[in-house]
Length: 384
Ligand SMILES: *Cc1c(COP(=O)(O)O)cnc(C)c1O
Image 1 (cartoon, rainbow, N blue to C red):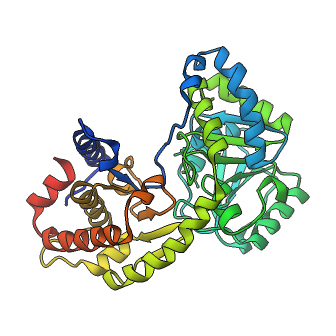
Image 2 (cartoon, rainbow, N blue to C red):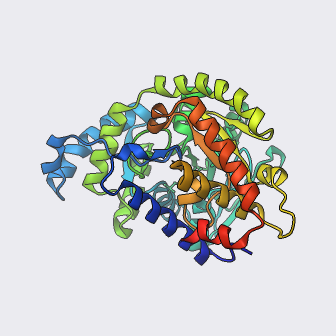
Image 3 (cartoon, helix red, strand yellow):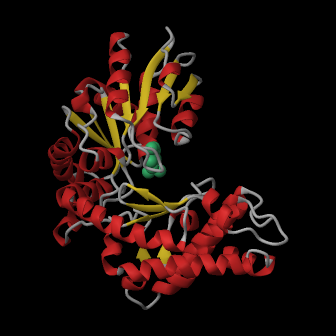
């Protein structure tokens, strides 16, 4: 076994970050290509810097945040959190009592772990389903969560969205939409309405997903709900601080839906070429992905068994160390998704031409096939 525990995954992540630090030492940022779609941009202006203080910062940026945030998500009021996970936790702490139930509907399991973990912390019960037949509220249900677009960018069909919101409204149970990536994928690419415009009570999005902002959570909804969630967030230190709020505001100002639409055309072209390299590659809304299961079908080492996670992590580390392409299985935290996603809407994708991307995949796949049996080489690529 190459990856035995989350501790191993911590070591793998450190190895990836060390590699990136060495690569960038003395060099331009342009030697690295972050296609994770989670680049965590921070597009503040020079003139913003003196304002990043504890009190003057909020005075200035919180006003802008209300304007820009409502433009993006709709609703009456917005609030910013350290992460989307932090916004979810604050909401569950504020709206759900111990012993009550949270019911989660998503287009495809599994859920993002932030939701079940927060429910557990609050001592409430949790049910999740991706099947409409199983979506039944009980008298104990005090919050419904809908995931608009999953971590693998599977999008909830519009009819299902309306169904779930209607059922919840009939029973007067508030609905939170986890639109981490969905606030852009669903609206720009699938042309669905914004979650609040469909009648959801609350929506949260990640400002680093398909937009060039810091990793943070932006929530919008009705004022009284936002107020009690903000209060909880401030009690537990979950609210975003002024520098992050400044980054969110500037990223919202810069957000250009057309960039996402442009990446669609490019995706279709690259995808056709990639199919010749690897049959199992799949399209995503803004790029393509290679699942760990696909890799396992492509690569069958002669001797050692390699798990799907091991193969995906190896592939991601080869993409990083030999081609300088950053994908999530290389740099993500323990338990991270094993899907290798290349996001063509990422800012860095514009600096790569199609053949560079295709060659990187072809050569990395070849390399993983070649070394999968060789534990020593694998360990050095994963951890050194
Ligand atoms: C990314 C994501 C989150 C969590 O975002 P963090 O920034 O990691 O807190 C929650 N839900 C979904 C569906 C996501 O894709």
